[in-house]
Image (cartoon, rainbow over all chains, first blue to last red; front, top):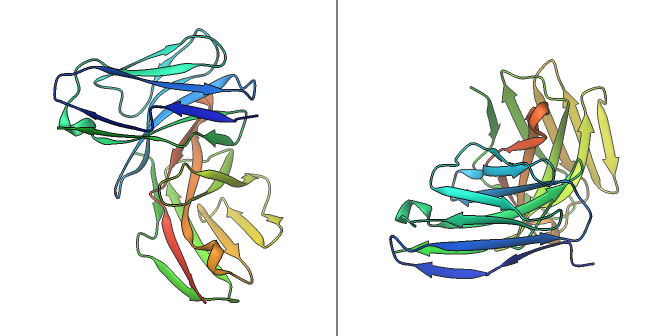
Length: 109
Length: 113
């Protein structure tokens, strides 16, 4: 039982490059989330998915897209990375309490 | 706008003492409030959930109170240990229809041996 897994753990991109962050959970949760965490800002919700086949914007969705591939997997895509997207990205899944992955540390130069 | 406030200054206490962390919120009546622990370089880990109709909840050395009149939750760690040193985040469901949480920025606790 791995819980929530994320790949990659670290990534460096140049401005304008694209990438997809992968997330998977094995707890059979309906709801999944993507957050970013910046110093002094706390966790901010980017997108969430209440169930397979549905996605909704969170607090800071600009510059991101998501795909709920199936019940287990929820990916986050940066189409054209910007330095402002340098952050730590966390995926989570939940029933009521949330279970977080280990995070992806992304640097955009 | 919704706001969650946690003391941004680190809390330093001696081992064995009780640590008390505060979470204040404005402009909303959440159905429940949650507390998480986050260690450096890791994702948050769920600790406790307390519902709006519960005044207090306990789990081992942890105690959470929820005062919906004051719009405040207190998080207590009794008999604190150096291993309790971490950042503690509170989170509220500020929009129950979305089933999404809004997190405070956290308070760092340092327990000195």
